[in-house]
Image (cartoon, rainbow, N blue to C red; front, side, top):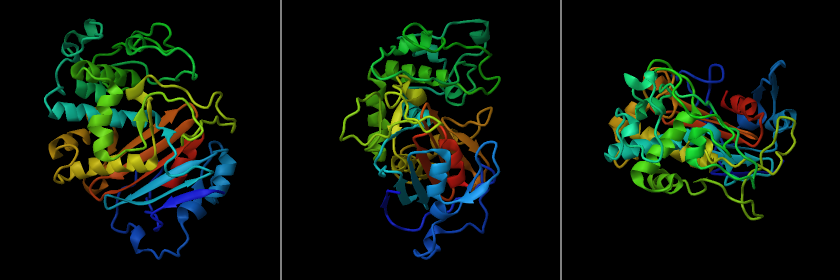
Length: 376
């Protein structure tokens, strides 16, 4: 099995209870304290739990074969530094994958930076700032306006959980067509379906409203502004929003179905950028997690102010903060985000109090099962 590594040090061993959360304990294994000659548990001893099958302990090579996952890329974080990165199955650590809903975290950070600059407001009716499109007024919004805080925390009462994308070469809808569900959009209209602020409900549609809000208030394209506000300051040089034609010299992983077959045409174009249109690498996403962690701790010149980072990482009427799922408190506080586009799945998490985390990305619809094993 081909693999490529950077910083060949022993990996951080992140332990989870189940597949989502590990409550940090004093007995945590420090990756840097293990001899470099010690076997790497990420490669040699995965607790694999395929759906509907008994769990088994396998090597990473075996797991890739069992799950029919062509490649996987991993980065681990220790004390707010990238501790170790590796890629398997012919990929390199600079191979870009579709991030799916991990795009939402990047979009949220951009929106929060605009809020800190006074260009957006967390708790104001977003229809005041929207110019290209407006949320239709109904009895549900009369007393409960949609705000940026509610959109980022999935409590705005918006429908459309996710998007399936478009085959390369298909005519792509504009953002307004996506929001209105009009041709050539293949998704329903984005609408308020329950009173904003009354319940949590996962909504990719809500993040498309965020995309419109960012563009309308900045008078810039979403992709260019987020590059300016997040990707460049964080150093995410292998990441981008938008569509790009496949070329022989580009390091872009092609998506695969759960059967192991390559996705027809390689991937799906995602004009729904804020909801799922980012291409990135685990190393780049690890840099973003470190930036959020440093902001949470109030490090000088961090990406966000400490006050804003703490707003981001507290529950807002459900399991979500602003752009990420959150759980626990103190040393056990963890921010998490899973990403799933057709043919791609991944997961990222970090404990900001200790700066320990992991990012996993795979080009397969079976990627979540593999990610859970690596995280566990």
